[in-house]
Amino acid sequence: MTAGGLATIRGSRVLPGFLICGFLFAMLGALLPAWGYHISADYRTIGGYFICLALGLILPTEFASVIFRKKDVSVQLVLGCALASAALILLAFIPLSASPIWRMCGLLLIGVSGGLINSGLFAALHAAYTRDVARTVSIAGILFGLGCLGSALLVAFTFYSLSVTGLLLVFAIVPGFYAVYYYRMNIPPLKIEAQPSVARALNDFRNFGSVAFALLLFFQFGNEWAIAGWLPIFLIGQLGISPKTSILMLAVYWTALLVGRVAVFAILRRVSHIRLLVGSASGAAFGCILLFFTNNLFGATFAILLTGFSFAAIYPLVAEKIGRRFNYYHPALFNGIFSFAMVGGLLAPGTLGLFADVYGIKVVAGLPLVGTCTVVLLVLLIWLEAKVTGR
Image (cartoon, one colour):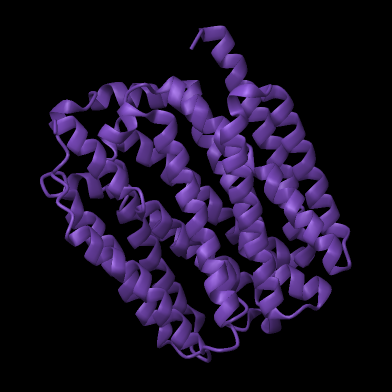
């Protein structure tokens, strides 16, 4: 087997790391009822939790590529997964009566672990990306969604059978397993000389198209995670349903996003992108409005499904554009774009904590409505720039 073929196989074997990232970052929204925040309604503290996750994600982004440049990528992935497992064990033994600062510290460590895993994944994906752009980006997004769904289902199905400590210890097993998985995988150090120059990557990141892609993912992830991070607390507060049912509704939301994303990837080349965009934006806006006004579980379920399916179309559209625009691969560039998007996904629910404290929990359905309009504007600007420049 050629070296290129072996590198492609190794890159494909690394892809499950995106499942771990989704599992870790989606965990908080499902955990909030287990920590009792549907009773205390301490919205500012909830916002602080999401902001700590975002800060942790940012910290390793700048330094990981330098620190691990001469080491096997496996070392970085093992360290990220092991740190996530240790942070979850730490969170497991923090009493519910303890100061929220302790949980914020644990979530900060989980954010750092996610940042390490992200940068390691993008460093290992060079061969897989360059050989099949669309397939790599699609599988990464689907695995990330599966991780998000898995975390919600795990909390929902163990909500009444496990204590918070037991639940978090079960969570810790998952990244611990992948730490062993990556330890046994021999991924060589990234060959910098085989990559495009840093100057070329930075130059691409300075142009409008790259910045617009990053902003679009920033706002779209913000839309998705504003709903995902607060949905259980919102449903309990608005409809008075049980915590377990509210977390199952979160799983319904992740399922709608995942199934919708797979369906759109399958039909993307056979439908008008403009019609798809307009339909998705209209559906997301209507879903958010319906969620805002609903007063029963049936209406909430319909709103969640509609919003999830509508949000699902944006990522495939952006992934296809990224594949066409960047026919080369530079880990630092792609890690920067997607880390920036994930920070947006975590800052949105963090900001919602401040708004919800002032205006009430219904603001959870209002912010994604504004974000959807911003996403549509950015997509139209990207298409206009492509027409003008011929890219």
